[in-house]
Length: 243
Image (tube, rainbow, N blue to C red; front, top):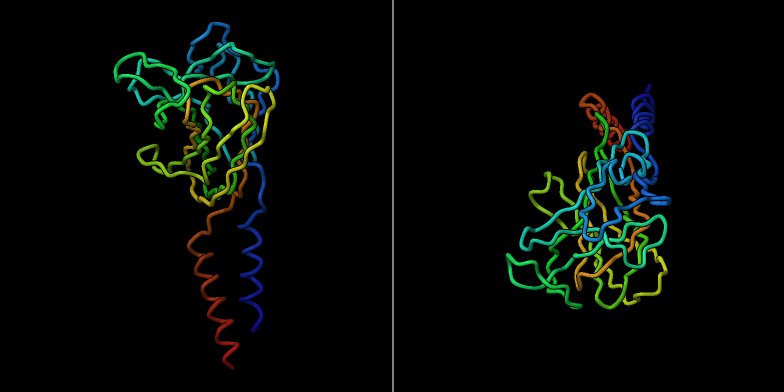
């Protein structure tokens, strides 16, 4: 009987943990974008860029649409550009604008380091589950020297009220060669609901994106009775070692 509680606790642990997996994967192969330059890409069925179509998720995780966002400082918003596109990619411009607040802004090559526009999406765990996100992967290339070069990801656990950087900023020095390169960002964030945002700076020119994925784990949240059982098993182990 002395082994009963510890063995039950171990069995319970096996049911509430999982191994790392790709929580969501966007593959833009075959993507059809707007044909008019400057159109804001809102990712709905009107332009065949719906996250529900292009996102693959693991069990007990739901991904929201990829949405565009703006600081509203400039009248320009993140939009589609037809410059040098290839089949199956997002080609977006107006990331880090420079100019006078309230005006249309300029598209200088340097940018001012402020993430004026961005794309973001939500990840939501199913009832009774939570996610631990450990890695974000991006496949992209810069259109040229005027394109944003400092790739930064952020996350919010409170619906977008506050943001924290995820991993380190990656600086892409290559530009204009049409080569998609994979960049990886690692961190450790646990939540049931997450907003994840890509907000590059250092220029406002085009960034071509053909894939985004998020890796982590999905774990069942222990019920209070399970947590109490684990606590009792730990106490039993301590008492047993003292005998």
